[in-house]
Length: 327
Image (cartoon, rainbow, N blue to C red; front, side):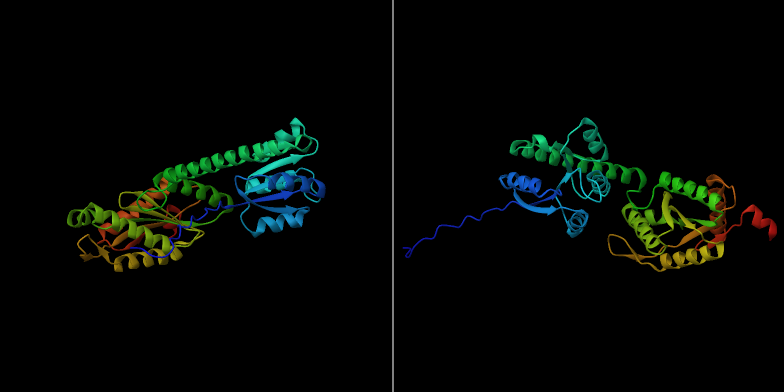
């Protein structure tokens, strides 16, 4: 038999996340009207921030997340359109433009600069403000999703799904870009073609899944041991390309040797925990004036072939025609 009083379980109130709205308007009366309308919105818990001049706007943006900006077109020092363009470019928050004299030209400019909503103050009301905020936030969500989808497509289009490095198409595009810059600014750069030695045996002995893990680990070692300015990509199969901008052959050889040594010392494991090692060979060459990507890759590939011929696990340099003639 139970004794005592029975306490009813407490129902925990689920709070809506705070919704931060930044009101940018140099007219105190207009800010007060907006504040009055916004405080009547009950479907979300709103925190209001107000700014009457440029310094206050910048401080509010610098402090952290803003969920919505209500921006007056006529702001002192820096116009509302200028603020809109800056906020939209940096994707800081959705912006609804407010204007005292609403015209089609101002509306068109606002949307062109990146506004997700537009409302003339002359027709401002509780209902219209609530509606424009709902529409603006829905549009902002759709824009953010579209940008995320676009970014995913760009990743799929430019990066190798296994290694995370640039894929063949993208690394060749980067090489052509660099050739254009090198021709313009008369700068040297080097290219290394790296290949995993006897990779077929890895797949035959340990399985293709282990082979994939080996390629992933090698890609990681490459990424971690080159400069931020250097560019690495998977050329195909077990072959990688490393582009070293503003680098002479002697400096590039040091980088290539370091990579060869690190990869050779790295422990590789199969699914059963068996430890093994792999080695890599590299063909290294330097770009020459007015040379195209195909010619440069062909010479690096020839250097790689010579490295394989000489016993693998080595870096083989092959000079371009102009340097070869001087030797």
